[in-house]
Image (cartoon, rainbow, N blue to C red):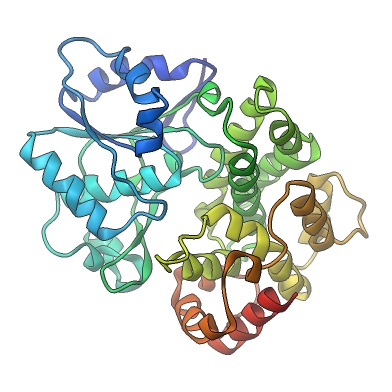
Amino acid sequence: MASLTFINNTLFDHGASAQLGAVLATHKVKRPLLCTDKGLVELGMVRRLAANLSNDVSLSIFDGTPENPTQLAVEEAVALYKALGCDGVVALGGGSSMDLAKAVALAVTHEGDLIDYTAGLGGAQKIGQVAPLVAIPTTAGTGSEVSNGAVIIMKNGEKLILASKHLVPLTAICDPELTLGLPSFLTAATGMDAVTHCIEALLSPVINPPAEAVACDGIERAVKSGSLLRAFKDGGDIDARWEMMMAATEGAMAFTKGLGAVHSMSHACGADQELRLHHGTLNAVILPTILDFNRDHVGSKFERLNKAMGLGTDDDPAEYIRRLNADLGLPENLSEMGVQASNIPTLANHAAKDVCTFTNPRPCSAADYEALYRVEIEK
């Protein structure tokens, strides 16, 4: 079994989830709160995970994680944590469950409103040690199991970022077997989330060559090797699932150097609780437009990107991503996802304030975002 120590201790291999009991014992957690969603409970995944725990571990379950985690859901989980006397948090699920679990681990150890700890308000400096946290991803996309951030829809309706080294899970357990049978649409959407993380990290102007190398490796695993398309076409391809989970983990390792305008636009759209849009799908749809927008501001990095994707030096990566999205059955534009022209001013203002904007290769104002959203809706 691989043990990755790039950011935290990550146990990575088929069947790794059986190590949960040993991991909890290492962190002296006996009354964990498991943050997950109702779908994983219904699938029996929570029951199978609990079967690996010893009798001296009392597992409590919060299964109310929404598609895009909210401050209200965090508060519900916090109330349950305190009422049951829990002493740690386990995240089981995709990025939503892991982000919610991070916010819970923060909220049970810090006073005040959660919004006061968001990155845009200088909240990172206020975050100290949080409750012990273990993350177990069931999708290959977000990489939240090794990242220092969480994205939460606050009570004011904004989708904001919590970021601190203290929010990195103490241990991540990456078991590709948990992604077997993931529906093809979710395989595509979460896989393109991982690809977007790697690409935006590579193109970010922040100087961090090791992170860029990790990003390129993730792109090669997902795209050049064909693992994303193989996992999409055959949900039982265990080798492709392993490669995609590694690519997702590497994506989050890489974006320690920042993301970009794709995520700023995606966060703004994801804050709409009526549309309830999937983050990875948004990233996939928006990515080609932002590649076009950044084209003359990335130096020679498009050549590195093309090489990582297995393309020729002069190929257009934006066009390639558009074709890949089509092969994966993903929407062509935001209008197909329900975003309308009337939403643009609100979305643009939200995106311009998002912290990912500040590490985009090309400066992007609210007016720029209005134009970009218009392109995304009309294309």
